[in-house]
Structure formats: C-alpha cells, structure tokens
Image 1 (cartoon, rainbow, N blue to C red):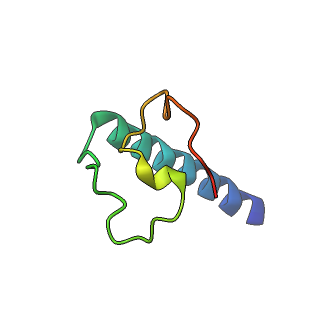
Image 2: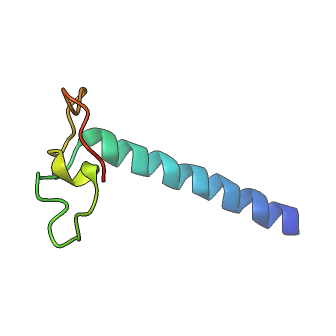
Length: 64
C-alpha cells in the first residue's frame, strides 16, 4: 500500500512538472533590467546589465 501511494505521488509530480514546463514554454512576463533593485551591489556582477552580454568585459576589471 505504501508503494502504491508513493507511485501515485511520483506520477502526480511528473504531471506537475509537465504543467510547469508548458507554462514556461508559453512565455510570460519578461524580467526587466531592474531585477536587482533594492539589493546591496558589492561585486562585479552588479555592474552588468540584465541579461548579461556574452562577452561581459572587454578589458579585465581591477578587483580590490
């Protein structure tokens, strides 16, 4: 009986996974460049736009 309940739970989780993937594939509200607003920028990753370009820095930045 326990294995049957576990099997049904596993099956339901696969259906939930498929629903989430379909919703993501359909699209939704796009993230803006202000996704980091309200945080405390302390590293190099905070100087890049969102989404980050492929080549982030043309010259190596100085890290202190």
